Length: 556
Image 1 (spheres, rainbow, N blue to C red):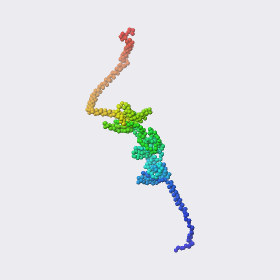
Image 2: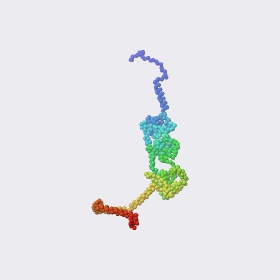
Image 3: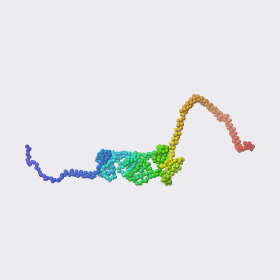
Image 4: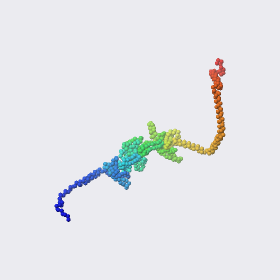
């Protein structure tokens, strides 16, 4: 049994006054302060946080939540927070948290695209993404209505943030023009091709071009645009023409524009003005002719001719071939080549001297009767005729030439028909071809006559004659030549004897002490004396010709 303690050893309880209710402990201030700070941070974040937008892309290559940013002018203005499939798994929906400072950029016509490395013939872009990764580019719109859901572009626009003006070009097809292709003015790059799309009715292509500031002022309502892609090479009757703008347009295509010299530029064209895109510079800048006359020509052949081939009068280009075809002669039922040419009188007037322009314009503006009268005078009285000539020997291109031939016979023309028929005469290579054809026909006739000769009997007789000649030559070698050798040997002996005789004669006659030499000198002296006497006699007879009849006088 345990030992009991004395009462005095037990602890004594003491009473304390109760604490007043409502007094908080200092321990509670720490969580309260943390809660106030958290609420402040949350309120500040709500007040400073920008909007959240969604962008719908066909594909989101290289886009990752928490890593991909959205940039404008190379400044990060937002970050991708989520990437997920949408629209029945056919597209990608990207959620982006945008800074409050960039909220004003999110309007109805703002455009987004994914920036990634891109190499084209017209240039290289997005190389910085090789290190930093792909990001979302932004081009702000001009609308004032805010928007939070957008549809992204499949490719980056050619022009993102540069002042200038847009125009629309209508073309039958796109050709080799692509987005980013250069736009040239006087061979200086002043813009780019921004986009293209099929026309609403499918009849052509609408090409949007962007002209940089300050070059948009040179685009006026009178401006002509043309396709400057590649190399424009034309080998026609006028010769070889080669045109190109630059190496870039040669590889990636391009567009050029200018104002024709015959037009005066007014003011700059309006934004989104519509123009026609011509196929070449020559067509775009071609001056229209106010007056055009049409005439028909019946040629021997259409070979080497084409629509647009030049029509020249006295070497001056005054028209072009408008149509090629055939016509059926109602009487003979034969087909004939037919050309329809367009003649522009204004081009001839431009070649006249200033003092003759008034007369030329008076003739052009005269009535139909006066025009027929003038043409009739040119054809019947002056001999104006049409010739189809070769302009290029390499390609065989031909053109229509009008020239005067005073010896040409008067043609039979129906002056009431429309269009009027112009008389044609052969000329140029066609005439040479005709003459060459005649020569070849004669050669053919000669060859035919040669073929008709009895060549086989003639050949047999010739072969027999050759055999007889060969036998004769053999006999000459065997019989005649030995006798000839003997005769030649005798002749050599005779010549040697003659040489010895001549030497002996030379010694006997030409030696200074020989008797023959002395006698020869005496004879020469006598001959000299006789010649002197004859000269004296001739002089006397010349003075006294009557002496031949009467004789010499006694006193002489």
